[in-house]
Length: 86
Image (tube, rainbow, N blue to C red):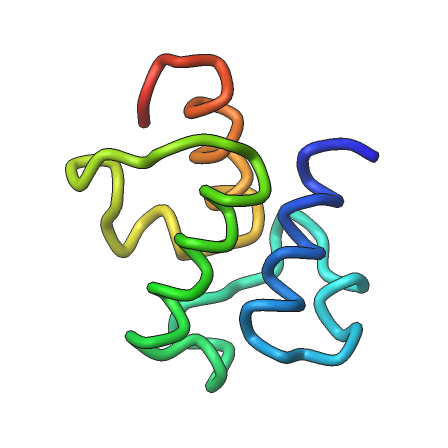
């Protein structure tokens, strides 16, 4: 399973999308497009990603642009996995 697929699974679980996220692609908009993605859900998503991938995001890495699309969120995770930060 690649990073993008894993991000979609965590997203689906954190937002309780009941499998809907598994049909998303890298261009799927998130913040502002998914009513389930509110401020509390963002925290659950961040925690879910950190726990799933064994990474920790820096506060400076997290802003609205990283939650714009599935692709931007996946890039954040990939950068954290590579140890380069966002």
